[in-house]
Length: 412
Image (cartoon, rainbow, N blue to C red; front, side, top):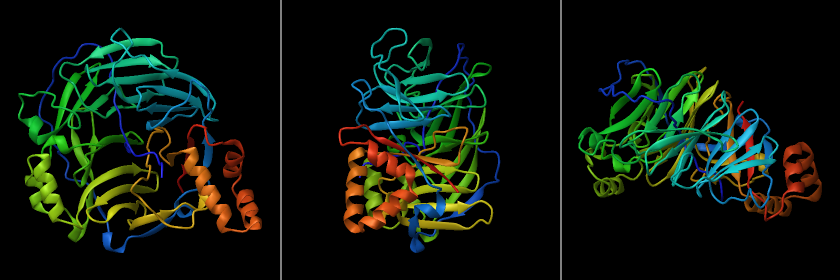
């Protein structure tokens, strides 16, 4: 199955702005005890039907040309007019919302506007800019959609990911805990999550969050946005934090009941110890991989040792919480439940939180369609196609050698 993995979710991102990095480093901790507790009932997890939470999706086949071919997708950004992809080959590809290829950016090098390693890209939709994080040399590059260079800003000793550009302010965020230490001589880098916050007025601020064990275990953390709130999701913890200009505060805490992580897990000081302790506690929730706030709900994906991943949907209106261990995408005609292990939960349309974006390989789509035609009668297949015109159009247009398909699911 070739779903686009979250990145992070939730996804995911940072960028930087203008000159003058004056050092305003100081400890920041949560100063607000108000947060929402979300129960996750692991023992009663059911199976999710897509049509219960999504409206009919739009399927967008991405145009295949000699310049737009790509392999694995690292990030998808959706704007009102564009689909922007970051692949694992240090390239950015840009398509319009109908999937027509517009341009690609591949500027590897060490000169102005060039990079050696590209891990994360973020979009400044208001200005029409792209921000690139050069993870090896620790600087940020700003370009337009054609790859024209605007500026480069270096931050000494900055190495990490993901990054995030606040769409409402000049704040830029970089998660240093997921990469390497910001200051190798600072012991807090061994015991805290470290978020770098930067804007043109206040310069650089270091935000610190105590973490349960060594930072080298911290991967796939990320940033997301809802309204004007920016969230930070550490992977091995139960808390989602709201990030502000000069501090962080807990926003949501997941309660797994008897499946909550045992206290011993927080004593691990390195990856090996963490793995040894983890193997002792099958059935405990150790990590969360996706977080997305919508107008109506909180959607999250969690890893339960020995049981794979589960999705939890928390209804903000009535505070009901439902866990799911599998799903069935009836918009693709799927009849058998599928695990969430490769589920793509993407939160990359900053101005519209009520959509979910997923990428499918063409081979997966065609294989699934073949299985559907073999399971049902020709009459039922024709009825299915008539009821799902975007799917029918996609099937008519794609072939095995084509690029991926982007699926845009409106959330009910």
